[in-house]
Length: 129
Image (tube, rainbow, N blue to C red; front, side, top):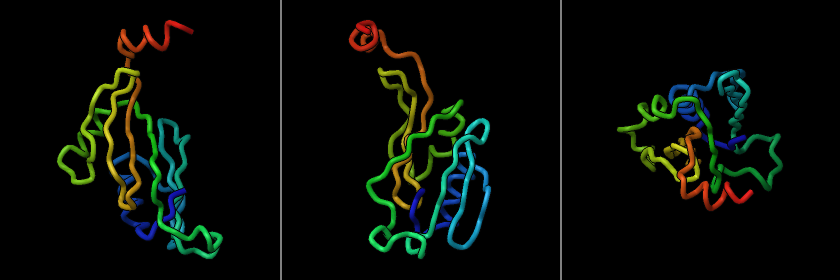
């Protein structure tokens, strides 16, 4: 659940750029489904809604989401010239190809797919198991 004051912008970001579909849409709550089989759900709720206990009525901050996709290059192609791209696509030695973007609420989104870990990483961390 992301608490937000930007429901429409957030819905557009996750649907248009990251392939989620709208399951429910109201003026205070949006439920999105994503993933290859729609197995991921993401809620976006107005931060000041009465259902949220008063002490927690705040816009999301200090949160990141990690999304695994089947084709990170295809998703990345939508972000290459956008201001919300904060880390270009790269291969990590631990076995991930990913990039990072930021949603309309300031939530960091790490989008990636698994790749083969480097030989050095496997030797240090995986071969010792």
